[in-house]
Amino acid sequence: MSKCSADETPVCCCIDVGTIMDNTDCTASYSRVFPDRAQAEETLAALSAKAREVESEPCQINANFTEEGDGVRLDIDFVFACQAETMIFQLGLR
Image (cartoon, rainbow, N blue to C red; front, side, top):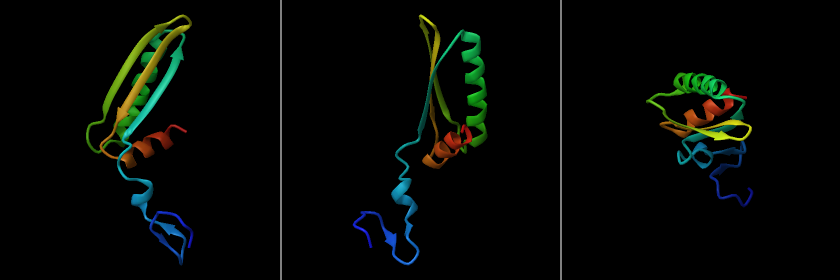
C-alpha cells in the first residue's frame, strides 16, 4: 500500500470519494474579455442556463462587467450547493 493519506482499499486500489470531494470547493469561476458588452451578456445568459440545469438548490451567480481597452471583461462566480454540482457544471463546459 502506498504512503498516501487517503483511505485506500488495497484489493482494488480504490480511494474514498470523501478524499477527493470534501465539499469545500463549491465555486466555479469564469473570466473572459469580449469585444462588446452584448456578447458578454449572451455568454452570461448561456452559462447561467447551464448552471440552472445542474443546481439542486439555487446557484448563486455573481457577475461583474469591467470595461477594458480591448473590450469588456466578464468575471463570473457560480456558487453551487455542493462540490459535485460544481464539478458537473465544469465538466459540462468542456
